[in-house]
Image 1 (spheres, one colour):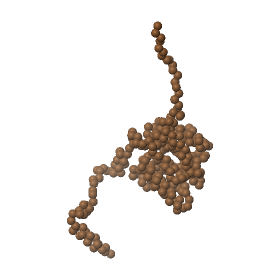
Image 2 (cartoon, rainbow, N blue to C red):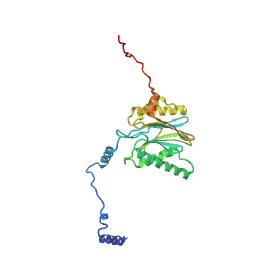
Image 3 (tube, rainbow, N blue to C red):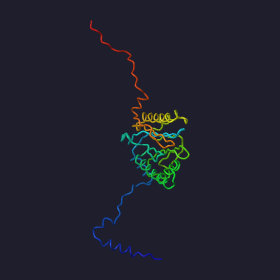
Image 4 (cartoon, rainbow, N blue to C red):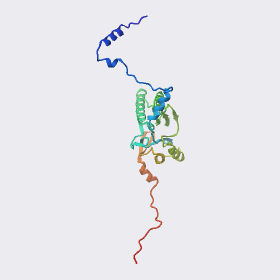
Length: 272
């Protein structure tokens, strides 16, 4: 069998006969590759070199009445605080929330993408996607992009047919199910408060106060966390924002300033 290449030959002759206009399009642009024996290692080191340090504090936990989700609102690039009003809790659908930790653009884009896929699933199947299914969908997407520089550490929290559910998903494709998680540079401090005060039989008010207090203490100790402590509750009727308090005001609420007693007061001696 012989291929007919007459069409390609005529096209080559036509391009060769043209003058000036298509000269810049005939040769593909080229650039030199770095002279290294381990190109994959070089690529990873280059990504780490240009990637700015980030910080945040997010947390979520399951209790008897649903899921409590809380986060701060500070965005930072190394030592530079770029914003104090970032919305780190993203509404995926009326019954599901996602949290942001890592690269802001990566988290916002893939949560938005997940929201679209969850809505399409609902339209196609006439029922809402489960929290398990949504978290698995996100984990599969992020796994397909592993090694490409994404920076995502998120929690997917929501209420579905089986009740409250909570999953942790990261940009390496990892996925964990649990009852309480904290993600971000301030998470060790938040875990200390959570582990000390967590009880499954808390009511909504007690759970909200625990989440708010954990975020405050993390922002107090972690310089990359701060701004506003936002608290959301996810229950059988969907999610609801409970509070958004400035952590500077929370400091004086938890540690009120008390006037100190004067040990010795200097008085003016009357002239003789």
